[in-house]
Length: 637
Image (tube, rainbow, N blue to C red; front, side, top):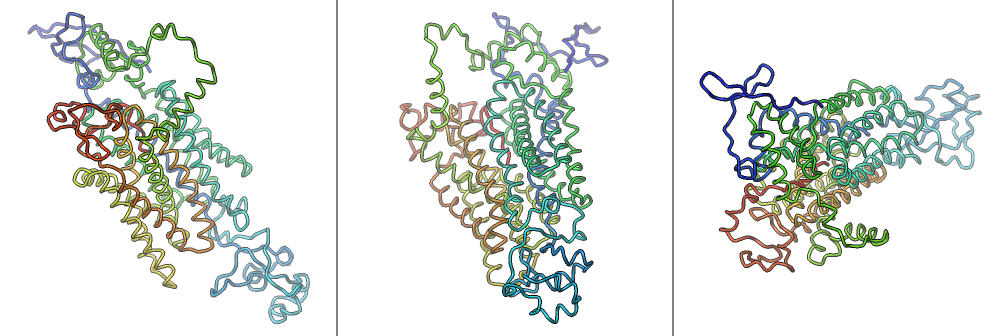
């Protein structure tokens, strides 16, 4: 990514200075320098952001580029019911098919009815002598079933199926026969997506810190595109599952990298609004998924249609900047200066002299702790053995559970995240058990996400984090439990009623999922904040991995059972969330504010949480807006 160096200054006739950038002349603001050669008044990275601009054309361009990855995620995460649509199916009777019997004739003779229903069984067939049936003919066979019976004529499970191809030309299910005893494999096609998201959640933070935001995003973009097109050509089920897993790993890493990048480029007062708007493209992509599937039915062509929107990701190679904060943390001050100069040029904002700004960047990195530690500072200490280093890393992973003051809090968060993820994906992809149109159901499911994101923030401002989270869980539990009761009590439930109740629950659980990121980050000290959100997100993926098995296997036995399970999980999470402390209107918890370690007289203890006195709180610049710190985590579902 090439960026022009600072252009020379010119004097106008009135004596004022301008900086020429191509054909545009930008008036220069007068900057004062300190004795050290730094820019006066520039003491934090937020001061630098104010100089280059936080709402200019460059910021909007970067925001749109980063948001695009959120738009592409649903193409992978919520498309399995459309790519793997299951048409009507029944046992294949080879003898009758070779005799040119019609589908209706085969079903009428060979396939039993479901108990208390006019629908036929999908996985059972009668034990008849079908060679005799061919000789007798269709009418005679129906009238003389007792002559055809073998072994009592009881139904038995078959292992080859026929499908109604007038409903779907080709799907994942029809190509690899993912029904009946192979139904768990169908659920696995969705479950592996969440396994990939789990792996991506676990490794993305480490890779982003080690290699930088831009480099990881670029690599993941390339493999995201390659794996998506690889699914189009997958010759067998095993390779399809492998590619689906890799696709999810790269898509999650791509999403997290872009979210971290955009959060590090916005000012503290913008983080709440930017965090909310960043996930809106996810909802738009959610709505686009069924729209594409409605017009493109063969599954390989449909997968190709989902892969096409990924191609614009190659624009990252030209227009996506590296995070200046990360560059400062690596001691790459000149590269950070180039990114900032590029931003100022596009935003048409004047910059102080490059040498002075470079001095300021080095001072900011040093004062804020971003600057890399010199190896000399660790001199004199013998290197640790591999075993001790490994134990240290393992202990760090479990530090939240091992720390008495944090153990209860993180375990409560783990369950709430597990429940919210299971219920979110379970309700989002439960159209089959509700007997609703999957295209309309998934589209409306994406539509209700937009107000869920936008209305959440007023709710948490006036009600607080904890009360809002509990209320959202209860709303979801109530609506979904009503669905289960109606399915049990009524033989036929109006589809409109089921969709209204389900989408109301979906709207509530969507907001609860989004709120979980904010609430969890505020519950833990900055030293463990990223770890808490990251590990909670990984636990959430376990819940989302289970949800397709609940829908597809349990729902195949009892169509009301998935709704009952999701309602119970939501209600349990609401009860446990009540045990968490409120964080709204308080300082973000710092390491020294842990209950067992705190001795600051300016802090007053309120139960299990410490709240600053009003005077101290008003004078704390980091508290304005109750914003997250620079390590804001990705709020991806």
